[in-house]
Amino acid sequence: MKTIRIFEYIDFLDCFVVNPAYKKMADYLGLTEWNEVVWIGRYFALDNDNGEHWFDNQEQRDQLEAKAKEVGIAAQDLLIIDPDRFKNDVDGPCHTPAERVLFWRDVLRSLELSKELLFSEARKLNAERAREDDFIEDLENRIREYA
Image (cartoon, rainbow, N blue to C red; front, side, top):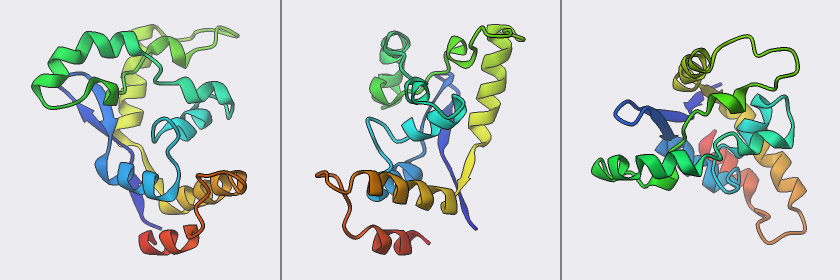
């Protein structure tokens, strides 16, 4: 099954933005909550809701706002790796903050997810929204458009 790249790395800012092709697909299939990668963060955080906050770093975005504006990127679109969000202090940490940044930068640069996973997550989220305004009646048709 085909895959789609989730992030684009912005070297100039040393951070990420959501890949526009994935962003369009996530929005259309109902994968977007307050951003398009919230659900992915939950997997990275040992499958719990704390993962939805993996890019909650407004202070760091504020620091890059002027530089981001120079290249036409809105600061709120910046996804910055905070190494402290990738440790839990239970039996470690085993790596320094700098090592964690290097590791997660590489992981996110190369992260591609299958359409099979994206479709499965879209169906799951849509079923959870069955009685809400953001339920997507024609989700299966939308999935077929991307298949």
